[in-house]
Length: 435
Ligand code: S3P
Image (cartoon, rainbow, N blue to C red; front, side):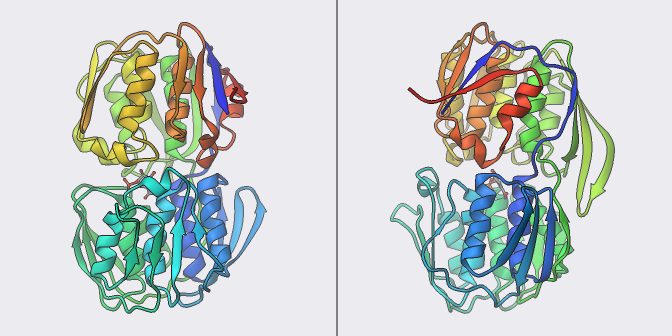
């Protein structure tokens, strides 16, 4: 499947983007091992979260889907998961694989976690190492990639672990395993990362203490179900924000967006580039802060992106690269090496795509310099990565001629309805079958 995008005029509008992927995964995972029924609203019915949903169903959890975004998860309690009939296929989802590795290490049965071509190429040693220290036994391919074969029936113990990389997935993996371990676990992060797991554990009644970058969780805890309202995903809103910023004379309101401060690096970075983005009506949705985002067309200028914001904007660099390419002057990025092990090598994928569109990009191991310019038309590849596909599609809205983005089916992992929403905003986007 390909996108064909033509130069477009963005309409003034109020829009809703789908639910937060990180929060949706966690609601399923905690709801499944809690006692009682967790009612979820605003759930993201994208392929990644649906893979997690299926995995828990495969382990005997009854999950009722009332409609696309409303679910009831009938928790089976800490000891209630049942051995699945076969490997759990987590599709494209690194979050599902890394967080569930923590859960599975604490079960009484063996399990196998696998996924698609992208996921089975991603590094898992980062979760295998701490889980092994907790007493787990996990086998991977020799290069540390999935499938993961996780032995059940082992007694885990709490650990004191200093994360070598800033990763919410690794942090959350350890916290989930810690729920099944003897004694407390303590995790120290090198930089603050998204804290949805910590917030949701608290909502489910867990004894968890956060002190700066250190999180302490008591072992062998039984979670209690609680309702979870999932905010709209700022990572999806980022594509709308980008389209509006690059357009002329547009003003768009994106409603009910999660603005957890561990996620808002993209807003800070785009504002520093001159982006007119304001947070209106800030309020709370359960444990998560939300707001409506008012975005207006803006003249962007380049500069140095603050490296301390990287872990707070980790999924939005494809969007920020496109903003940088459309800005005046050069934009330099450093400390972004983690982008190379996402759903694709996002530094290489964005450099390749932007170069096709006539933009000069200098690429380094853990950084890049993007030279501002004018997008030409052309044919670019998403490398099967949803966020690369959507970012390059938005570049097409301000290109001098049409842009074709190849290999875009992955968009459904995180943003079902992307094409319809963008079309309603005035983006001239069509979906074509690959020749
Ligand atoms: C996520 C954490 C991030 C992010 C991913 C979602 C999460 O990954 O890139 O899309 O839900 O915990 P890392 O922890 O590997 O940085």
